[in-house]
Length: 514
Ligand code: NG6
Ligand code: CA
Image 1 (cartoon, rainbow, N blue to C red):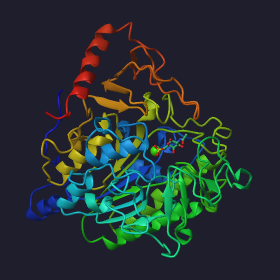
Image 2 (cartoon, rainbow, N blue to C red):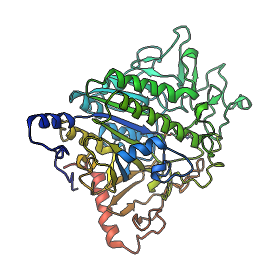
Image 3 (spheres, rainbow, N blue to C red):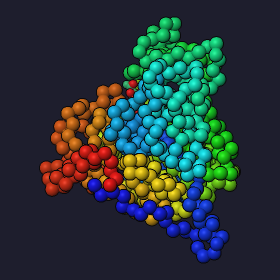
Image 4 (cartoon, rainbow, N blue to C red):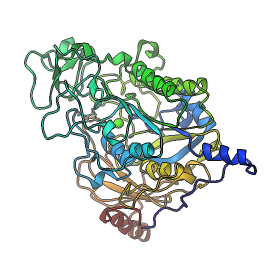
């Protein structure tokens, strides 16, 4: 497989070079602060700068206007855990067993001996922090995790200096924050117990107490009731530590802004993973009714507000010019993801995936093609890029940016796309691999996309989303047919026969890089 298309050195500075001062300036500006804003379940069409009209997203739009907006950028997978795993390790999650959607008591799936995005940037001298949704497991898994003691290994063991986490997702227990190794605000006399096996006696569930719920479930999400909402998994105790769903965005923003303030004088890397717009969608009262789409639309407004708070903090701290902000999402959109929150009824004309087919979980493009915006006023000229890029590339690209060398076995699927991020290379990857919740893979080369045959179901009954699975090989031309409607496999066996072995080669190899 042809590997990185690009050289490793950072591109020439926009600054006129010449004297020593300019050189110094340039050297410093090649090591910007890095803020990675990672949304949850935001689709390709959910933001105004990507065509949405039913919701206003002025802050993300500002970022896009001041930066480079990508139209062909992909998460590696169509669900959360594998996308995050791939982004943080530079290895496709589908190469490793056990990287599907995790329970809230799962062990950490990133090997602490592995080089990660965070440990790589830490070696480059960055102060590193993660705030928000984790969903990569915590603890060793050899024995049950004790939520009342030190919770590790976790982010601090893979190169983060600071962490403030929603351990799994908002819809999974435990519904507490974990700061560094500890549950926040935990009363030792009211310990947390978590089980994904069996109900905990005395704790109401979404089935036993259904008529008292603040938000009813549509499927699943009927285990322990926390804050009036049924969750996946059972928990008891930790009353003083429970998060308040309406305040999650504020809490995460406060922690983020403190991190920025505390680290403003040194290079930092902040991974800000929002809870929005994952279920349960319970935006703060300030955002309720801001759209006609109910809580899903309002959660997008809340997401945008969080982006605005971060951009404002960067402005206030004088960090905007030399901070590389990257904004994307982990997988495509879903409406009914387990709660009766009117997302389906109120969507109106809004198209969460824009022109794309499928949604969260699918192998069709809506599963993984994502909004992707980068802004770095000092080095990146605003515009739009149609280059192909994958989130798995962040590791090699940011290693190149910060002068770090990755050994061949490190970040094996991550290609150095620095020139693409800087807007100099307008082509990007020679191929993109997509991965569905069902394990189906596809390869995109240029405008052509081949989806391997799969006998698995064509629809997900719970969400109503088309999976893209088909026992027949599928071939689409995404330029003429972004909605993947016309299967050209029979018409273009030549192209099919070219792409098929390319996908096989990536699958067989331990790594994409040579
Ligand atoms: C699914 C859940 C869904 C959501 C998803 C994870 C059911 C039936 N569905 O298993 O509600 O939690 O997992 O979403 O329980 S993700 O964005 O974190 O991948
Ligand atoms: Ca997600």
